[in-house]
Image 1 (cartoon, helix red, strand yellow):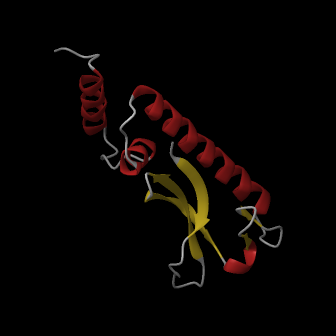
Image 2: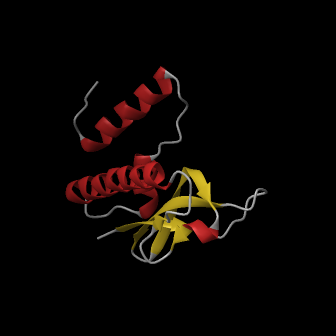
Length: 122
C-alpha cells in the first residue's frame, strides 16, 4: 500500500520560501508532486503537516492542500485496486500528467491508458 503525505521540501527558493509537495511512497521509493505554492519554514507545522495561522492565507492554502491530498489519495487507491504492481512514479504521473496542455496529446494519453486496461480495441 502506498502512503501519501504533504511535505515541505528542503530546497530554498530565492525569496526564502520552500516548496510544498505531495510525497507518494510505495515499496520504500518516493516520488514527489510539486504544488504551486511555497511557504517559509516558520509558517509550516511539521507535525500536523499544515500551514500555521501565522501565514496570511493559511485557511485557503490548507483547503487547497487537503483537496490535492484527497485527489492523490483517491488516485492511489484507484490504481492499487486495479493493479497490484504499481510504482510511486505511476501514481504521480497519473495525478499530475506531464503531457502538453493541448487536446490531441491528452487524447492520445487517454487512449493509451484505455489500451493498457484492455478497454479499447481500434
